[in-house]
Length: 297
Image 1: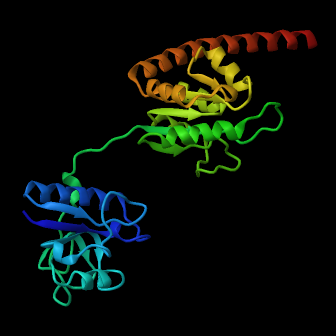
Image 2 (image 1 turned 90 degrees about the vertical axis):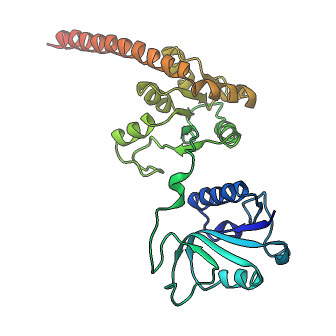
Image 3 (image 1 turned 45 degrees about the vertical axis):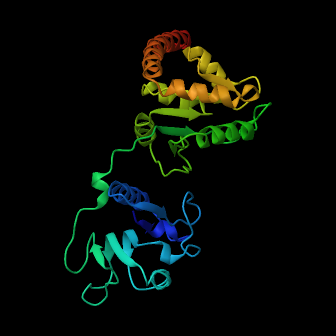
């Protein structure tokens, strides 16, 4: 059994390792282990779970494999190659910057693209990896109400998002100055509609989510609750907290629920009830406006 060191741009601090680099790395490690090799992975912060290539003994490795990304004859590649000059070197899924006829440091090169050929990227063969996509819709501080606890609410949302693997998507519903680059109500609503659930401290974060049939985890950012809690009660949406009653475990359980099929069905039921109620509001508005106008004629 031989020991192999797998390296890539995830092995160098601040060199822009991408999701594709990590997916390709994990595939290469799987292939090597399936072939009966022991594998060490060279990592640098913020990545963990491996070794520092500057601290290992090159003689311990029968093979060094550099995986994924552009590869050229410059820093820090030159330093890396010099340290492992006594090892057999393999390149996998690399975009060779220089023509391979001019410079190719590898004993084995299965490139992604070079002066001699191009292949599909390794990521196509990786097993699908999916996590929940959660919209995060936070309100800006509102000084017009007493009992504001915006920071406490935002901190609780941050802890919740950090507690598990998910794709958190900031969504700003404010349109005069929008921090997420959205320009129209349709853009805001279209983004919310593509979420698996929404975590929000905004009234319209809750309303637009339910309008789209997306379950919201709602936090009113005021002690005792203000308009957000009032709207949740008016809708009959129970996954709602006030900022003075937050508990991380309960929030985690609420997020589990909001990501369930049952929550999505309930959001749709709540939406349908709200539509019927607003239709009655429309009729009442038109009727009362006509009545007032008749008195002024």
